[in-house]
Length: 390
Image (cartoon, rainbow, N blue to C red):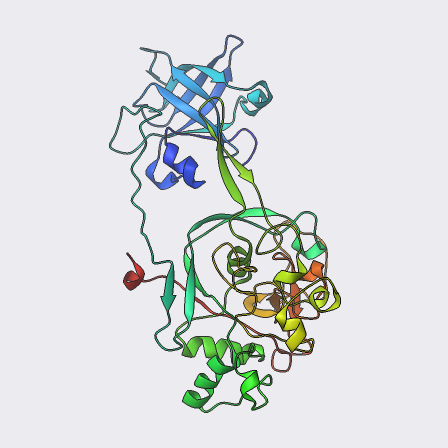
């Protein structure tokens, strides 16, 4: 949100969910002039229908304005309304946000004139089941609910910058990486080649299927799903990273509380299959005793290494294809010869990766030398439908 551009509303529910339902609010005004006595002249494009509005800037309430009674008048040369109002800014540090000439959004709920700040708007939300079973692939999917989340990092690798808040609809993502056993069902149904990760031994069945990008995308299509975008993948791996805190003035402030790994911010080599898992003599695990360094079953580390939504092995084991091209994020000015539409983004790191490359925000180019020859693991996503509702 730009400096000096505000949205005024009395909707508390929107703050609790971290978003403003602007489609339900429609009256806008412009600051014509500020006065020294905490008064301000406002130009409404439509006649204001209530006397007080809360000022929201940077996703929190910073103050309010009260329209002066019996002072509504037509602005000369048009049908706009010029209104005198008294404003209060709750904290001194926010006073500079109110400036002459800026656009100010004054909003009221359609069809309702009198509304108290404590009068919460009833929001009807669609509720989806927490888990589903795919019709064709018979695999478990976990729900990633709609809403905002923090993506990227200002402190990580150069291609992870800048950190920003995105809003996403709900989707389901496979709880586990697609295994060789899963992929073989597709191989037999479609008469395609076996994954390179399957050597014919039953010991390979529960390991992640390692395939090229087009094989992964074709499997997803067969299953009635698709590969995740990298923002979907990242949200599923690290959660929203946002919390709402109530302030002293009854306003609500959204706080970033991001995590770097699916389970939290502290790296723990006992929770994932990575280089440190095999190299650290302090890690006690049956997997280390019974297996040589390499891929582990897709259900390994279930529970201890789960993401906030219950997805397993989103750090380490097999890196995973996404549907996204490897490009710079908006606002990132650092050049990279790989940016463009030649390679895809792979996520999550693998069993040889160090701790820095198994972070949820880490990005790696996949498809070198080509998307037909490079290989990785994968999991699928799909949008909820009417049958998924409670």
